[in-house]
Image (cartoon, rainbow, N blue to C red):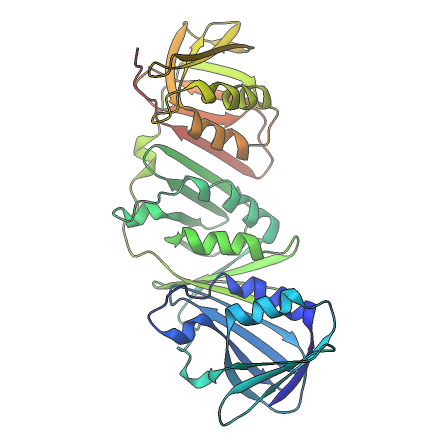
Length: 371
């Protein structure tokens, strides 16, 4: 089996698929890319059994066939080569791979492509279509809030709720929660499922700047298809917590502040906070927001004042600056609104100006005030 391909085009495709290559996998062959040639079409597959990425490209080939090629050495070789045509020659008996470039030859041991685990195929799926830029935006604004606690598997992913013509994404780690909703999707179903965080981070890096994504799903897997690439992931089989129950309804105190001013102030003030809690205290009056922090162990202390508008009684509440910085960093509006009820109940962050067709709500739990 022999085929020729542009080194830079192949590298680009391998970098998309490479995120799904297994690290210390149960099956050693999962450290490989699966190359399958049919006609002049090369299909590249990579999998860790939880997440699979399949992408394809045109090549010049003489016969069809399949081979598994070690991912690490192949990627390193292509990164070190300048753009040029390269030729792969595969021994169909030993599966040895020889790569020929303008500089010379490189030999590596491949494996029989038939030994690669069978890749999942869409079976009894429902499907919706989503704009690729909108899906990228939705993932960026939610995935950071998912938990890393493997003891609570449901919360280590992002909850997708398909509700006919709208899609709701929710992520939480019990300290912070993000709910992102966008409409104008094409769907005839109402259902929900949990997509793992790793798969969404890989998807975010692979999605194109334009076009549509076909999202198909059944009880076991989700299939994201765009351009000539497909990402398949095993869904998290767990019950997602009732997120609506933790969103406080009655929040009589409303703070409005410039997002970037508040974000930059928090980045400075957190330097002086306790390194375990990252606690910052917000003292709010009708004209001014005072942001302060102290670390009694090292006698560190910092205070800043920001202009704001505030509708409510004078108020003090403490939050983890780390969580506020993460949330303010993914919002894009010029000003943010923070709805508050009492110092012991969650605060709600909202953009002051909503974008048409999308809604975002962020919730952050307070830190109990310490003296």
